[in-house]
Length: 102
Image 1 (cartoon, rainbow, N blue to C red):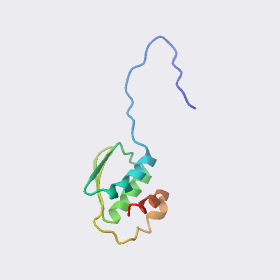
Image 2 (cartoon, one colour):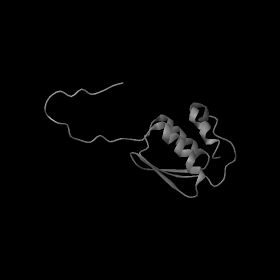
Image 3 (cartoon, helix red, strand yellow):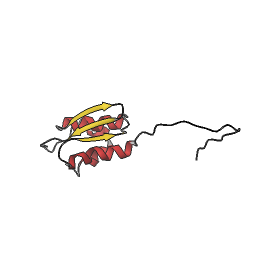
Image 4 (cartoon, one colour):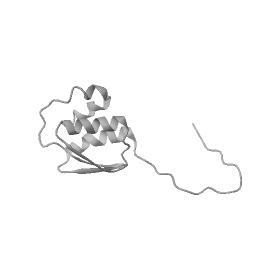
């Protein structure tokens, strides 16, 4: 386990921004398909896996709007033909999570 060792008599002050976890966000994106209308997710880390998942959502007819550096709005597709994009899906193991909501 990593730790910080503070030596000296001066106290520490400040803030550290906490961003969301990739694995949590990868499950929240398909969960947006279980609601009607648009869902806003905050504290989303836009790393490669998240970007691929959002690309799949767009490919199957969903609407994705990035609001700022860590916020995204997702509107699920109104219909789904049952086919996930074969060129993107194999690159993302988490695409399996889409099967339940779809």
